[in-house]
Length: 160
Image 1 (tube, rainbow, N blue to C red):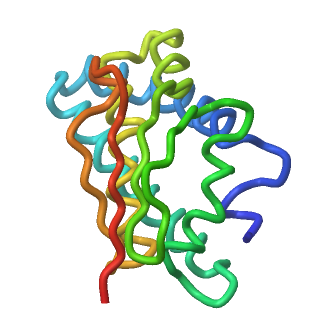
Image 2 (cartoon, rainbow, N blue to C red):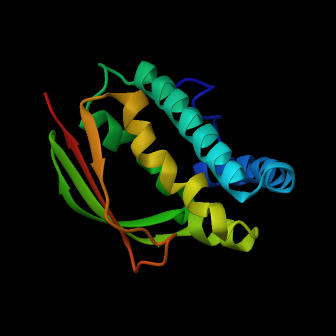
């Protein structure tokens, strides 16, 4: 893992909280100067671009190159410290499906007063990560805890 992809010893939840503290001020500043729509679009695009770049760094550090298995191998970074509680449904070379039954990312953003943009800060990253990691990896998800569902339903597929 490259140092820039993820600092050693820092949980992903801690990293996201630090990022959110900064983005909260950017969001509030943009809301005041340009309105909610521009503020939301700017945060969404900035986070998407950040996710793609971080995914490229993960891809570059993947032993033996990118694969759905290599992606599964780094999942503990996102779940570390109970940040996500997941129930795996399928784990193979071509499909990785799981439900998130507890999301401390959602809890953290809501506690920080960022519930209205929590999905932009967190959920928005997941599909964008695929773009930067490997275009053969796709994500389907119909619901998230962040947006009020009982669980998040992730279905990653890896094609030829």
